[in-house]
Image 1 (tube, rainbow, N blue to C red):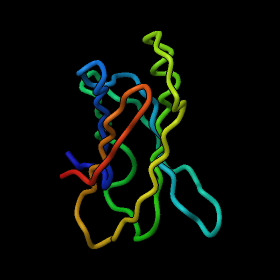
Image 2 (cartoon, rainbow, N blue to C red; image 1 turned 45 degrees about the horizontal axis):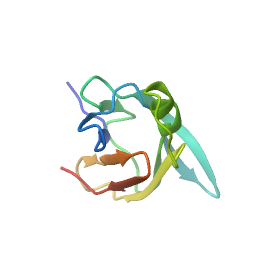
Image 3 (cartoon, helix red, strand yellow; image 1 turned 135 degrees about the vertical axis):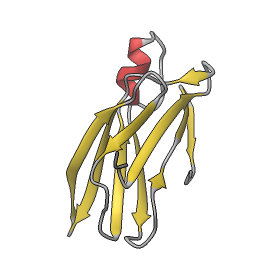
Image 4 (tube, one colour; image 1 turned 180 degrees about the vertical axis):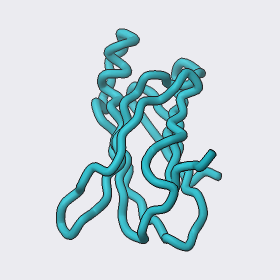
Amino acid sequence: MSVSHITTHILDTAAGKPAAGVAVELYARDGGAWVQIASGTTDADGRVKDLGPERLQSGNYQLQFDTGAYFAGINTDTFFPEVTLTFAVEESQGHYHVPLLLSPFAYSTYRGS
């Protein structure tokens, strides 16, 4: 089975569990515009394993997370209705895993493995 060049997962740090059912969109920068190239939804483990192609060209990409709908679904107010992470991909590099650690009023990320 092939793995997408980019994968992600979300941990709801306030609840202490994976954030399931979050819509995630992957965008590529094309000149001055962002173009959607893939989308997915986090599974029961908070992961999206099949998000886009096996290989991406070098460039800038964005992951957009629909955190507002997630928090609304668990009846929790949030300051961040959407989280957008912009990062650079080097074609020659291997897999990119971009996790999101999320709470209603804060988030953080890092380049995972």
